[in-house]
Length: 183
Image (cartoon, rainbow, N blue to C red; front, side, top):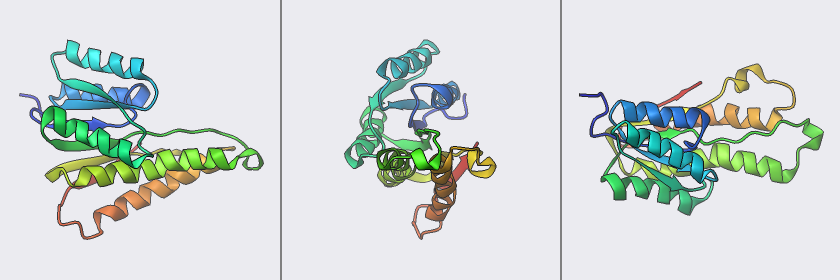
C-alpha cells in the first residue's frame, strides 16, 4: 500500500514545472489529486493523463488563486470529486524580472496577488476541510535569500510569504494541521 492511499491533495499551479512534478509524485504515493491551472488547460490535462495512466485518480480544475471565488472553487472540486481534503500544496506563482524603475503598478499587483494573496485565499478555503492530520505545503523560493538583480517585486513576495505562512499556524486555529514550506 502506498503512503498516501485514500488521501486527497490539491496542487495549485500544477499544469507544468514543479507543480506538475509534485502532482505526479503525490499520485504515485496513492493520493487522488486536484491539478489546478490558471491558463494551461492542455498542460493540466497532460498531467491528469499521466496520473491516470499510472492507475491513479486526478482531475484538472481551472482557477485563479488570487480570486476568492476561484480559490473556493478549487477546494470545492476536491470535496465534490473525492469527498475530502488532506493536503494543500501552494505552488502557484508568477515572476517578472525588471529593474525597479521599470516596474509598473499592474506588474506589482499581479505578482503580489498571485504569490501572496493567492496563497492566503486558497489556504482560507482549505482549512475548514482539513482534518487534524492535514498538511499545507507552501512552495517558496531561494530567491528571498539570494536576491538576484531585477527581482525586487518577486523577491519581496517570496520574502513575505514564508514568514506569513508560518505565522498562520500559530494564530490559535483549533485544528492542528501541519504547515511547511520548501525550496
